[in-house]
Image 1: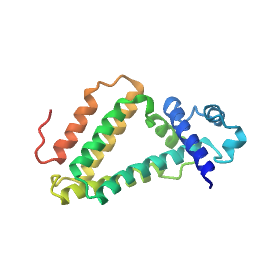
Image 2 (image 1 turned 90 degrees about the vertical axis):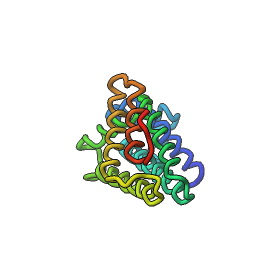
Image 3 (image 1 turned 180 degrees about the horizontal axis):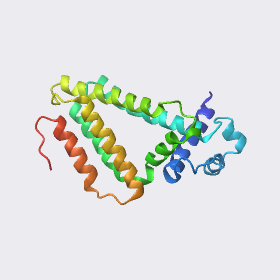
Amino acid sequence: MNKRGNETRRLILNNSYALFAKKGFKEVTMKDICDCTGLSRGGLYRHYDSTKQIFAEILEVLLKNQEDEFSEKINQNESAVSILESVLERYQMEMLDSGNSLSIAIYEFYSLPQSGAAPNALLRQYLLSKEMWSRFIQYGIDRKEFKKVDITAVFDMIVFSYQGVRMYSRLMPIDRDIPHRITEQVKLLLLPSVNAS
């Protein structure tokens, strides 16, 4: 695909992300996406056949960005503690930013029979995320920056707490201290000399 085509796809994905975060998956139509991107129906359909295809690509991009974030920093031999601090800081901001949460859209996408998602696609994403986090936590353990922990249990606590707060933040006001308390507990689990604040 040429540069202009790639730019158009990025425009579609970025604007669609905002729509899915605001309206959920079920309520977004191709017409909505045309309206928010300024593309004609033909222009949009030249790149994507459906909202399902667009949403699936958004999820793939998000997962790849997270993987790249860990891999790049690990390859640069960055401190595991600084990587963790950076990721948890971002998670705190995202948990409080209900307007940009895709949690409800993700739930709708994977729970609708006509979603077009491959069987166990959400499980696949969970397993890929688990693999990334497991590599990262093991990296911290190997560097003696993290305690020896049950990696799967720590990952489950992180992912389900994060996604739970993201989901709840769409449905009710979230106290600013909730994300902070969660990330502090993650640090307590992983870092040898952290006191709860």
